[in-house]
Length: 246
Image (cartoon, rainbow, N blue to C red; front, side, top):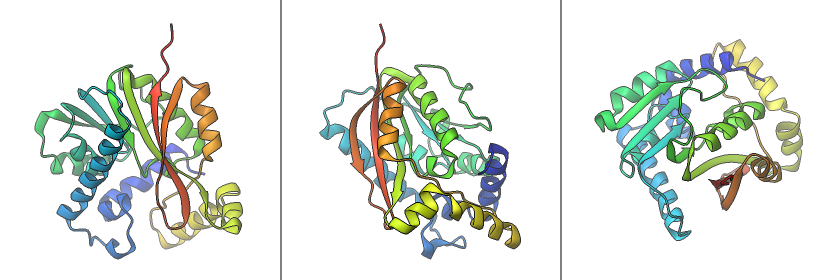
């Protein structure tokens, strides 16, 4: 499914039509029904939860610069700015970046960047003390997700920490076969969206075991795996440090 051009176009349309719902897709909020303050508070709550988890793991981490990948309108970027001196938000959709700049409350300590390619060459290696991405990689073909995961590890500082979320499988055995393995949902939903002339949101899975093997092969060390409660899917948050090479 979806090359980056298609993904960019779809998310740019979401950013123009219903950006807050596209980022946090609660059924009762579809149709521009999100209250902006409630939306951003949700981001604060999520980052507070992650930071509490990090503290419980006794992970020593610097709080210089953080990266929010797939930042959208800055829901998590703004939340990270309460903890880090500098925060960069990166997104594929210009419409989302434009709104993020408008919603920014932290001035020059927050920077938003458009990135429309399958790498993060716009960012310097070993720059980030913390990298976070949630509800993003599942909307990318796994080939792209793996490429970006490699990039995240490249970008981590020696003591840096990467935290990312991605669903592993569908809770239903039948749906897991049809959706997670065969991708039938993406195929039919894309056709339906074209008929209705609406943007399409892909949904992909990456098995927990595959993630673990992939990170091991690519200089990443998992220090914690956290269950990420979802109604229909089994999802995890991975806490990853960078293996130091001699």
